[in-house]
Length: 213
Image 1: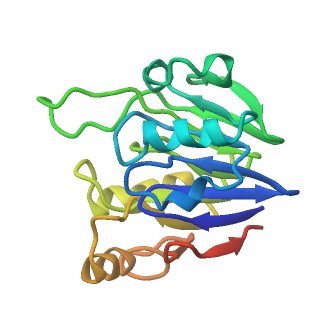
Image 2: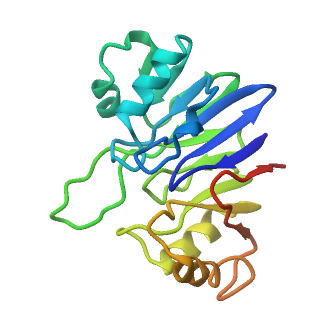
């Protein structure tokens, strides 16, 4: 598989000429959806889900399929069976990728802030995107897409999360609100720096593609 990082929380995964996009939101470059065969959306927040962008992509590609939570699916009314609502424990195939669903809820921001549903996606038994949660899937993860900056986490949470999931590699996502100082600070606590984890930590500039495995 090849992984391309786009703005904030969005990535594109490619294999055998097929393209799977996860969380194209309001902070994502428009070209992220170019040539997409399937889309996964973890939850309804604007930085992960852009209704306008998805409707435009669906109009441009009549074969595009979308898997997401029931709340996001409801906002994509009119697309019919091209949108499928999924939840914890379900498995499906999207554009030739095997996908398992893990998790149910968005991480707690504050008791006074209502929680929304959030699902994580494990792609081809290898790559895990947790959305806005620190879900630990009951499965081996080779590559973790790590949400490195959010109002619901601390660097300590990230260290413990990476240690618990224990992937070979972690790639930073959910980093759109960090400046260069912030990204350097977070990176200084992950990988073999700071308290240290056995996991290799990477941060890709938007538009960068790497080969996984």
